[in-house]
Image (cartoon, rainbow, N blue to C red; front, side):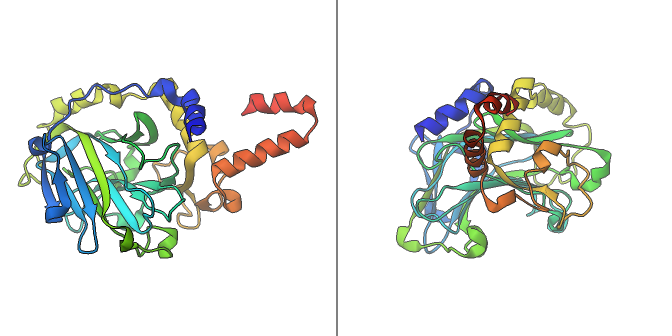
Length: 337
């Protein structure tokens, strides 16, 4: 694991400088959502544990809705057997706009013991749940061993998902998206719950409560944006103009050329499903997708990796092929990677 972390840091360490943000205590920005005793705050109020047991999961919600914003937390996931579990960090307005809700998701998907956590990002706009825009990835670290930072930036013009300040996905708004781009105020949610029906291998592996309670931890909570009261479902269009401009001037709103290269390398090594390449599900490519020919050739028409393996397996296979070829060709192929 240490070798893997070193390998990845050699490529993306330059993109991982900490953002200049202000953290909040739980009471300054959040309220319990469900789970009663399964939500446990630290004595200083700056971190919270969410537990899942045989009786209930748990969760919290931001005290305000936000018309755009930057939402971040350091999260540590449950360890050992976690199949069937979902830990979610996301924005949504589904409680207010039941038939036309918006949502931005980071969802961590548990696994059987000895297998790594995986996660997915997703976007819904204006109730477009039948047009899910999910991507799925592996991680270059064990998220149950220590805290890592996960963030969502949502502006009028783009959405960026981050892991440890490394951008992993960007959605740029365009006119063809119409209402599919999230536009209404949303709250920030964090939850842990039983998703046995789908989370691990399509529901093949269920939550095993002999390992309960399952504990996820959150700290260094960040809410930056334009707060909107829950009764202001449709706030004045100009009310957040100044805050939006400030948001787009922040360090996390700009993807430098180095950070963009880091994002490309992450996607090459760790993304194993993308709806943009799922031509079975979407014969017409969704309008926000930017098709990378080099990226596309690694995926089947189902949007999944070719050969049914991970990028790591593909890299190992490529190395084996290089070793089996004449030495004169090796250096040239390495320079092309």
